[in-house]
Length: 262
Image (cartoon, rainbow, N blue to C red; front, side):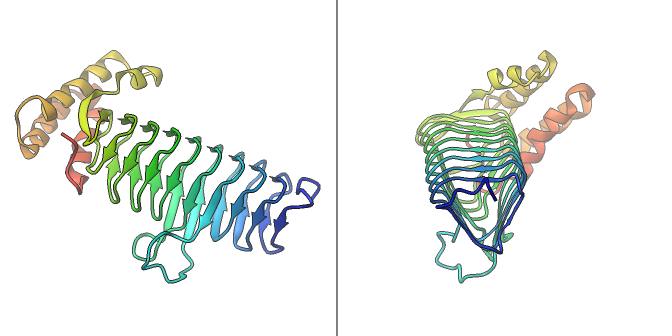
């Protein structure tokens, strides 16, 4: 308890590892669980049925686990789950899920969440993502691993963003973004593939070339979406070494619900 500042209010029912630090004037609710070595800065509110893993850092003035901004929510015991080793900067808001979806909002591991980021109800965010200042997710959005959202990017509800995608600054996103694709603008348009990001993560030249080829099939060949999916399946069958990357493209196209940015 020496790590809990005297001015902090921690409900006796909250489950905090003995190594958790809680700063001045922060409030921890009764249904909150926080794992080892997590640091909660000053003036942070963590409430709701919220589970937080190990080695996270919450900077001042964030609201974590508050009620969803959804008129249909009627007080159901929905949840927020945060993984391990996430950095959450100032003034972030992460809301609980709703009973109309999976009932849980999730943030994975090793994410870098900058100031003023909003994760709305039922969002599913993977691991190793970067959200720059003021990136905003509406409800039910899915974000794959290693995706990057630049400052002031706004994402419409139910959109999906594939792994390793890059969303440019001030982008207004109303459709799904396939993995590896770089989009920007308002309305959003596809601008190529995230080559620099893939290089930084150790993708080989054959992998990058295969991804560029898949991008051209979807965006430059003049094929319909169904024809592009069939062409990708043929490329996947003929190139075993890069089949996982091609499969990721093809399977994403099959799961897109709002159409893709083209």
